[in-house]
Length: 296
Image (cartoon, rainbow, N blue to C red; front, side, top):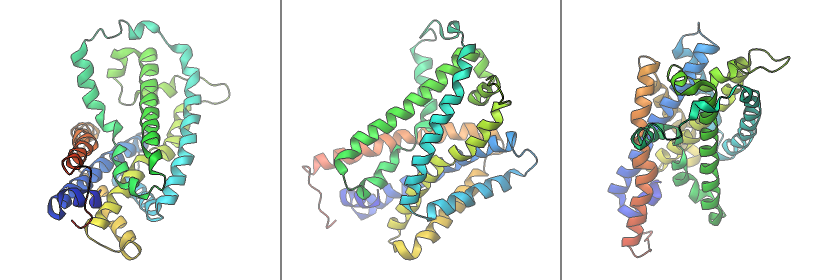
């Protein structure tokens, strides 16, 4: 994102835009880290100080990111199959669905639906990584196709989880739950396996850090470029510094409700970075007649 911004808008404005991306990524990661560790604290480590849980998590993430993009890519590939296993684990809950819970469809009206869409923007953050990854891809003609497939899968999974929770608990029941999907695991009965929510939380330990790792790499790599530092000499130092910034920001909310509120506010940044930046870059390219000089 740094090189593209400087090529299109010049060194000063381009650096400001790149800096905005880095700050946004760090804030997003910090809230993902906070929400992830809240679940870990409540269901797995209730007696462990939250700051310790968060520190251990960020140290693990720092180590993974410091290993480079190939390790991160392989890790994402493995985690994808864990998600499929999680979907299979949800199937027994379908016996408890009640179709009346989603009727009438659209009965709340258009305005609440649009408001809920804006609130959920935080969950869709991550597509901004294409700014960082695109220059690294050899087959650039495949990027658009792969990106659309990835976004489509994420939207499908979120929609599937939401519909299942609505069918089982109803809209009023979900409003009283902080983590409906986890509650769904509690009502799921599988012979031999008891207390499925514990299996989910263990699985969550592997799934939860994934978005932190991805955007963490994007922020660290972009910061490295912004400061014009050498990749081989300074990459790990930048990763550690970025990780400490994420850790500090994750401790800022006083409680889980404040963390949810901040997540919602930061999620609106997705409109600026995830949607606004590509449009801004596209307009800049059009104004230049489709040509970009590398001398700027």
